[in-house]
Length: 236
Image 1 (cartoon, rainbow, N blue to C red):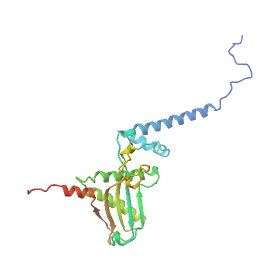
Image 2: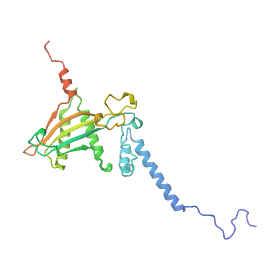
Image 3: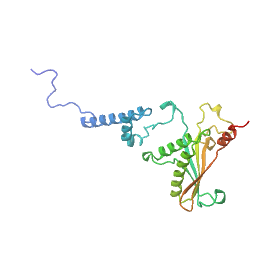
Image 4: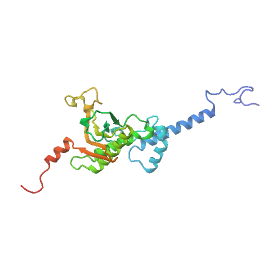
């Protein structure tokens, strides 16, 4: 006697829109996707050596689709707020003449809109933050900031056939969330306006007749004020 649950002869169960093989492949891809996203998000703060290796492996995928915050300095990711620092470099053709005696060739801003997969943006942001850290007016480390400025200036001059440049390191101040706190004269509807850029380091860099890179730091107003206000050592 045939069971009441047996299938009628000559009929099969209706097939779904995808075959079992396709569903298995999609499942594996989804697991890999969520694993990559979870790893880069969970390792944004306090990254372990294992997480660091995994982030490098998954970086070609997560950075391409902009899933990796990459230590993004936002309160929602690591509880801090750090303004980005950029380089603005004015280039000149003649290394022996001052910038006042020759026309400007071009101005280069770093980081530019290069590929995130090549880490060029992260490298310049890190160099800018290093200069900002060692440019404290109370204790400036000119040997560190000068070495970075020489290296960056030399590379950009070589790429643009220039012999002199003025390199500026600018911190982009964040526009306050309370729009009423915006300083007078600052635009309320354009948070990327140049007036939000705070100069923290400036230097003249040029290549001399011996093909050596020379540098003279331009003292900022904040640093000059700090030096003038410093108390005298000894005496009344």
